Image 1 (cartoon, rainbow, N blue to C red):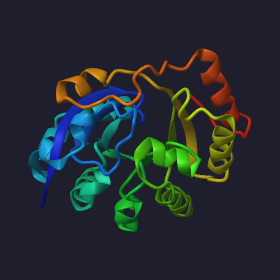
Image 2: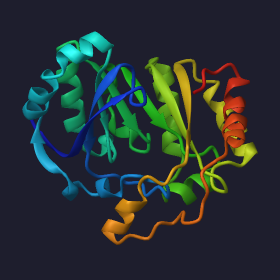
Image 3: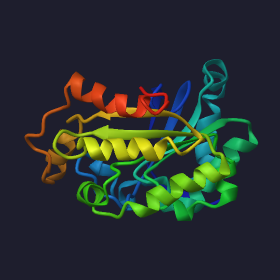
Image 4: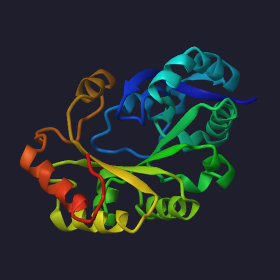
Length: 242
């Protein structure tokens, strides 16, 4: 078994998949999202080299909790597909022991995921930053096309998927863009729900500690009305929205 660069671990409920989740955060990400709350995960050197065996030893300690709550393991980041082989082996090891798995990804490196890897994923948490290519590049510094191609591939493979969309006033909230994304997601029969997430400033202290500029300084969090409007765009197309 190989080793991967692991940044940290966490236990969560509800936002990283069903039930209680043990979340493995890999280190390294090709995107530089303006609202990223974990700039400390951007580089692989920020992680600790960890073998798949060590990962599974930790995972097994929570097996009883997974069984009781219907939870499992979520691999997040950073970007898990930046370390595709390591991620694939962790997913395969969990699947072999009947542990539910979720893959939290931007989809930008979706071409790194083999069909065999995706067969071991119980749920994909796909983060689509914007429907507008120019806005997507402004948010992430990268191109939108790979993410949309990965979303369509997941649909062809019938892999259960939750879509995540972060609403940032003045950045991702243009109504035409939200409507466009909702229309696209509605064409994907494998999407079980859409999470419209409110922009927040939880990561600001990390930028200060790392000496990095925070590019959304002065940007307010969305109002309840703005969130409701965005959620309605998805719900009006028959999608389950939170």
